[in-house]
Image (cartoon, rainbow, N blue to C red):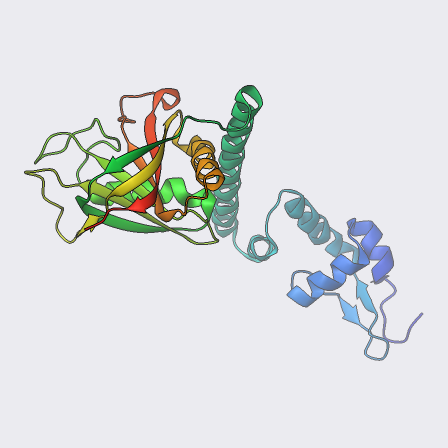
Amino acid sequence: MLVGVDEELLPIGQFARLGRLSVKQLRHYDELGLLRPAFVDGETGYRYYRASQARVALSIGLLRSLDVPLAVVGEVLSGAPEDAGRSLAGVRDALEAELARRRRTLAALERVMAEGLPSARVRRVSEPALRVAVVRERAAGPEDIGRATSAAVARLLPGGGAGGGAGAVAGGGPVRLVGLFPVDLGEVVEVSVALVLEEGRRAAEGVEVRVLPGGVFASATHVGPYDQISLTAHAVLAWCAERRHVVRGPLREVYVSDPAVTSPEELVTHVRVCVEEESW
């Protein structure tokens, strides 16, 4: 027996087997402060643990198997039960969001399997410059674009109003909304939604008003859920690339349907990119 070491203490290898963790994991959890050894030999640096610590080791293994981040594992182990519940609720919400994203991806993949690679009919259309009210939101990556777009619409149409072209709000009849998105998506995505200010319609207080440039656009019509618009956008960009058209400005989504009264499978959206700016 080593001098100063309790006979009840277990060397790291034996404790690793007991707690169903690897020696490497135990060392890492020690560095993070999640599971400190009961004793560390000052001369050799060997770590020793008590059998009673196996419950903590097994709990860490359980939480990690449930995709709980290590930072949250520490909160669960050290906090009161109600604090642990709040921490785990955040993990659950993140997993639910990821599951929803995976389901959307799966639905898009099934559409490609059923219909083949996107080949929507693309045509050239001319659009005039438009006076619009614009709200910007920042999305934390492509998977967050739907949330950011909805948030922008809510700010643009305070107090209600439809998210699509068929809805109406006070002060000017049918709503015409245009989503503006960067063609190349990065880790942070700047999302804008523009409300066309038809005659008699005013922007909400504090909302930016500007002119949305006109020009000649490559355009295709998407029919289906908003989260599958990327398939039609692919067809539009492929059409432009084949013809060596330089894409100018953001991708535009012109919302025709009102999602409040239209099923996701029947939503109509025009997907456009400018290929020739309007001359003045």
